[in-house]
Length: 285
Ligand code: SAM
Image (cartoon, rainbow, N blue to C red):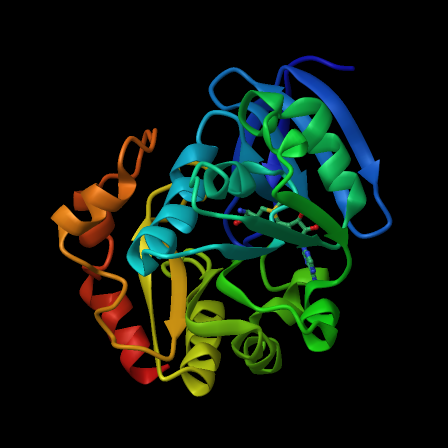
């Protein structure tokens, strides 16, 4: 334990975000990643893998709500969901808020992330581990997708950035595997970085999605710790380009009494309005 040490996020080569660690809870290798877990007065508990912030207790709701509720409510009849990555459990918590979801399979490469999240992020993930609909498989997501015969209505790729074990989750090969795992009418949503700071990676991932699916694009969410502007969530399916943007009244009816802090039907629809530089990047991707 130590107090008041500054910890840098080293994800970007020319710019760093520094957070003051009031208490360091863990800092070591897991076999797959270097994992740091610490407490910060603004963000609460902060999980960092290989120098990149993954999740904080204070702002996880923004990213997880938008990643789960947009495709689930747009689809309207989701029963089977797969998460690739997402070891902190925040995304699973949002998916399991939908009573119609019958089965959630999470395929996560690093058992230590799940274990640490279970012990330290109970404020948002406590309920998932006792939910009979939820199952975790410890495996590489790309290898799992290549071999499974299971099919899903929604697949969510809550990955690390495209480096280390996460790199494979941004490739066209992986997206072809996801397409094979979708039921008819199924939707994929995938973490696609912060376009302003990660334009090359964003373009590459969007180009790969568009090369595999009939329609692909992205919608946006603002997450304070993913700094540098809005974060893009890539979406893809073989349906109509507007299928993920039903009227707000339809979304509100489907949402029922879903408890959220970021997601609303109006925010859902607005998230598909793209700033020019992001729309242009999609055109050339
Ligand atoms: N929302 C976060 C972000 O945008 O940075 C991601 C959070 S989640 C903790 C990322 C998870 O992806 C990690 O737990 C990591 O172990 C997992 N992961 C990385 N590569 C993977 C792979 N090839 N297969 C399955 N899970 C993977």
